[in-house]
Image 1 (cartoon, rainbow, N blue to C red):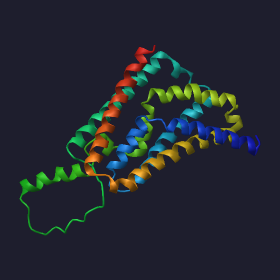
Image 2 (image 1 turned 30 degrees about the horizontal axis):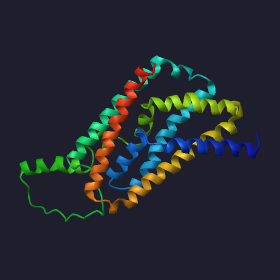
Image 3 (image 1 turned 135 degrees about the vertical axis):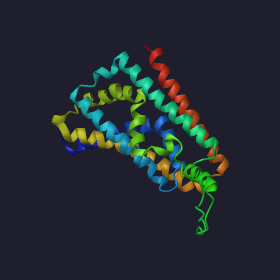
Image 4 (image 1 turned 60 degrees about the horizontal axis):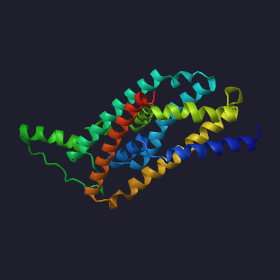
Length: 248
């Protein structure tokens, strides 16, 4: 393929990816919640999430290019993916709501330095009561706080049945239209890079805006945002888990 043809494949793949990334979904909701909970480097949440997302998509694109992913269109496969993904999203959403209700893991505004601890002994009972509270402030209570964004990017994408359906239908149609195969690997590479560039651009923008602008977000508003994210994740989980059984 000529350089002009490769640029066309890259550009169209970029636009197609961006049009999908702009739509709200479980992955975007997770990215928003994770960015607000991050104690440092929150602006990197988007790129990290997309790194996991891209790793999964690289395997899927290779499968589509080999023509071995048709089984995903089967009703049983859609139901299994839907139920598994719904369970993951419900668990994540419930954990996020629980921890937000307890006021855990919300880090809005500049960091306040703590005074140095003295060497005075603290009674064991008081010290034991402090440790869980300090661990909770670190945001390790829920799955959203514990899971690494790269891993979450792959798992949340994998648990979304409509992500699979999009690739089996729209994604595979694009590959067929432009004859993207392993024998034409430059076109395959241009398609993949264009697609991931769209995802990376949007998610990086979202996490950067939230991270650098959260100093102006009142703590109460941040709590509402996180709680809303939890509810939305649960809503996605319920919808994605039930819809395969209603549409088949």
